[in-house]
Image 1 (cartoon, helix red, strand yellow):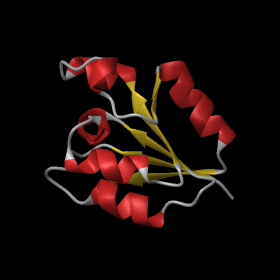
Image 2: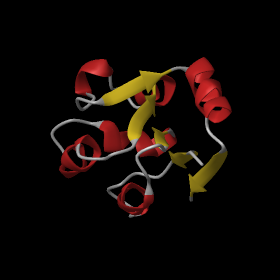
Image 3: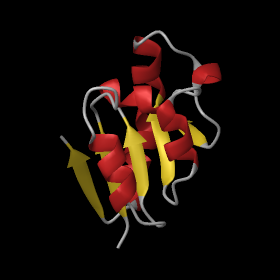
Amino acid sequence: MSILHTVNKSPFQKNDLRSCLNHANSDDAILLIEDGVYGALSGTEFSLLTSSSDADIYCLKADLAARGFDKNRVSDGVKLVDYDGFVDLVAQNDAVNSWL
């Protein structure tokens, strides 16, 4: 059973991303939304964690842009998605788990 994990809190303020990465399986997907997109930025302590994850990692483009970042700031291996891509991820996975 595949799970889409959504993380909406900054990894610099809460441990949700770290916990999510520890629990996600290789057939899961992780979507960083809202302040969770800070976990997708390259050059941070989290870029190593996200690049070594077995799960696919996605970042919502609109939330990244809303915080003043563009795709050049995103770590290698993190895939950018728009709202249609978000819907596709929900449909492709068996369940959704929101890390609050």
